[in-house]
Image (cartoon, rainbow, N blue to C red; front, top):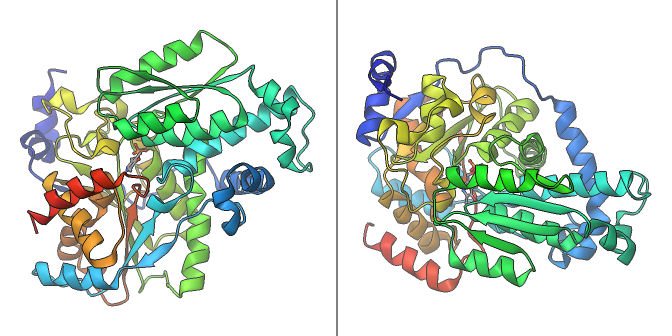
Length: 431
Ligand SMILES: *Cc1c(COP(=O)(O)O)cnc(C)c1O
């Protein structure tokens, strides 16, 4: 790309992105009307599919039994973290502060258990109905039988991932019996690769960044029609799998007495990598919960791929490398230089805005969350905390006692103790 100069003229904040200056980009198209390719019916279709699979999930993943196979995370009020936050910041946060702890989701310990597992379920159902005799009214626990395992073994699932999508897809697909291959980029953590291999997944490591891994995986999958490729850069199934979160969150709001209306805004802070998971969740929130819930994406200053794409309206036609950034971040789930094909387009009218942060700050919040609430998240998952200060100072309507702030903690409960300790030390040094 050699016309970045004209981009800077048209969109002055591009210059800040190029310089690595943390920004708050307010989406000028937020709240306008738009025709979207997905609807509320798509979300409820997915809810029904999860329900059909409940007997299978409960049997195949015993850790889900106590929640009756509903793969859902708690919404945790962070009272102590809020006090600590207020001690360290000039502007006090007067609304409620909550953590949507997807870090505790079963199977992958991350938000990827929503989209990744959902897409595997949908593929398994498709194979079982078209090549087997499964019907919607059956008890899906039958899919654990040797006959179905044999059928699934004739098919394959492939995915490219920085780590967590590989965990969720890899473990789910290999449990059904699919031949499962994951392609991983150089920033993928060793413990994630080891866990996948222990689950019988074929792990292919490529010494390159994530955006370059995807085309290679896509090409390998295209060589065999019996292989289903889970495309993190544009899959509709992943997207809808993430959107289901909103139905569950609405139930949690009702149960926990959290109001959402004109006088009770809810602000949700979501880390964005390729943009698929935060966009799917945001689509769900706007569709199910409505106009008074506002989503803000959070990205590293070195990898503001979704922000750059949305700001310039070029979406996936521009990458952070095109504006001279190196794409490097300690937040491995966010190390994605080019955004998804669908995220920016779908978010054009649904996203309130986005914020960029400097890497060290996520360690600070990760450590603070451990110290105050004894909750472990991975660095990417602490990104939401970095956006609160500017949101409440620059949008006064967000800093009222009636507002609720929800940091979406996207992953981390499966992080090994050794890694947790290293992160904590980095964060302590900054507190
Ligand atoms: C995948 C992931 C993200 C970002 O999701 P995208 O769909 O890539 O935008 C954020 N945090 C964690 C922990 C993740 O695993």
